[in-house]
Amino acid sequence: MSSLAFRSLRSGSALKSSIRSLSTTSSVLSSYKHPDYTTYLNNKSDDASRNLTYFMVGSMGLLSAAGAKSTVEAFLSSMAASADVLAMAKVEVKLGAIPEGKNVIIKWQGKPVFIRHRTADEIEEANNVNIKTLRDPQNDADRVQKPEWLVMLGICTHLGCVPIGEAGDFGGWFCPCHGSHYDISGRIRRGPAPLNLEIPAYDFTDDETLLVG
Amino acid sequence: MSFITQFFQRNSIYVATIFGGAFAFQTFFDVTVTKWYENHNKGKLWKDVKVKFLEGAGEEEDDE
Image (cartoon, rainbow over the protein chains, first blue to last red):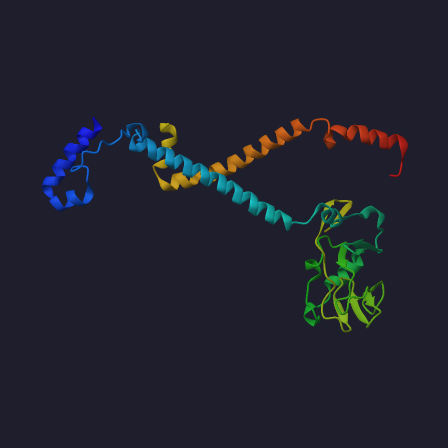
């Protein structure tokens, strides 16, 4: 049945162009019996085939996207800090144990951190400084979250010694290595150090607890 | 089938569906594999033996 249709199509086109019919086929001339290919043909409609193709392509894309996402996630998470590092990264301090006018030095990530419970006089003293005369001008309010608690990194900004508390000409800290004087807000006032004592990231989790880090 | 062909009509919807599906698939895959793994190793996981080990440590040694 199909070969019959084939034959009629052939003869129709042969009329239009004899050269074309010669070049494209020999079946017109030959008596060769073609096998029946109908069982091998795709009998689905164009829409059905296209939908299947799109579905397969889409599924492949979905799996690839999920795989790519996991790969990127794994790579990024490999750069994140590990649990032991995170456990050491924060230090909790109970503030109730520190009386007014006293210094406490704690160790945080291998570095000393000074915590001073300042008196009202000291806060006033720190605020009364004309910051235009300072080497590293900074308001006291910008260096503390609560005025009574001064938290800063105990490393001299000159060459990294640990300054001594309640010493020096300005009632704050004094670095014995090269004679830098810091005031009661940890600002550099005299000596070779170029910058004020650094303030670490910290937070008051409640009234009694300080979390450094 | 016509439900699925809705997604092929516009390329923007097609691509958005693929990316959205990737997120959903990842969660589904994660949950399924974890569930299978925990079921396969039931009785050997830390959460299963934790009670036994912690009890034993409490009785025998008091380091901490």
